[in-house]
Length: 91
Image (cartoon, rainbow, N blue to C red; front, top):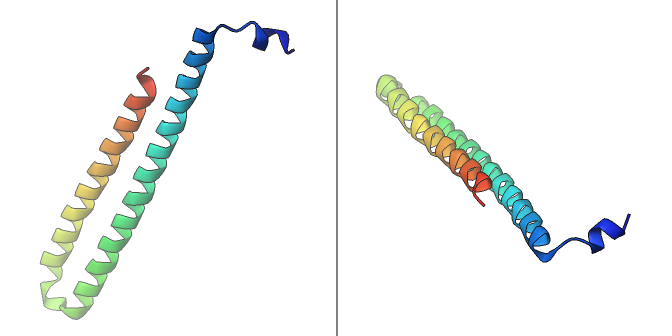
């Protein structure tokens, strides 16, 4: 069981370490993107609800602005996840 580990070359060990660091970085990137999007959407939703409660006559404008900014946050999160995947695939 220990013999294959001892017979590994330095290049194989370095390649294995690089791959594992890439997977770790991709996981951290995915996690941060998901957490950031969740926090951002929560704040947007809360602010929209508060704004509508304060000014019911401006409901349409507030709701459309909230949807617009929510879409921007979602787009940024998707782009971050795509970059995390790309960095995982790069060696």
